[in-house]
Every structure is written in C-alpha cells, then in structure tokens.
Amino acid sequence: MKIVVPSFDQRRKQIDSKKALDCELSKAEQYVSKLRKRAKKTQSLPEKIEIGKRIKEAERVLKRLKTDYFEIEAAISNKHKCGAA
Image 1 (spheres, rainbow, N blue to C red):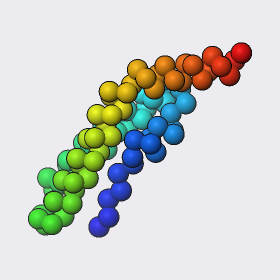
Image 2 (image 1 turned 120 degrees about the vertical axis):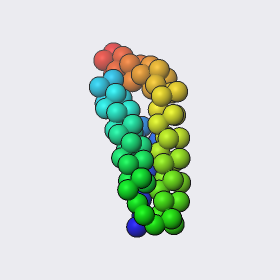
Image 3 (image 1 turned 30 degrees about the vertical axis):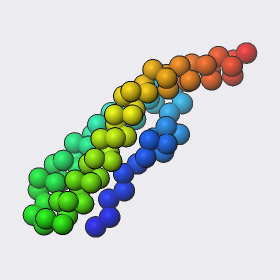
Image 4 (image 1 turned 180 degrees about the vertical axis):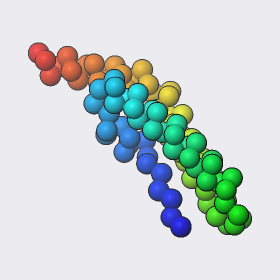
C-alpha cells in the first residue's frame, strides 16, 4: 500500500485566497487525523511503520502551513493588490 502525502508546495499552489488558505489548513489537519486513525486500525507492523512515516510528513506540512500562515496571507493580499492596480 502506497500513501502519498501532499507536499507543502502542492498545497501552496492551491491557495489563491484567504478562504483557500483556511481550507488547505483544514484539509491538512484532517489528513493527519485520518492517518492517525488508520494507524490505530492497522494490524500489520510494517504497515504501521509506513503510516507512521507518512504521519510525520503530513505533520511537517501542517506545521509549515501554520508557521507560514501570515506570510502566505500577505503574499495573497499583495498579489490581489498588484492585480487590481
């Protein structure tokens, strides 16, 4: 089983408004939660280890979205200001 975690850059490309930023942040949180639940239900140790690695990746993406939140928000507003001028 192959689990693909959306990267920060992939999520960032989807963000073009404050609403989209909040939506991606919410999706990232839900993804981490879904992976944790999946890890609890899994019986196989190798699969649990694989899911654990993906959880760490997803948590890194989530943390970066949270720490860069205001930078992304500023970039969006600057983009809209430049586009409106």
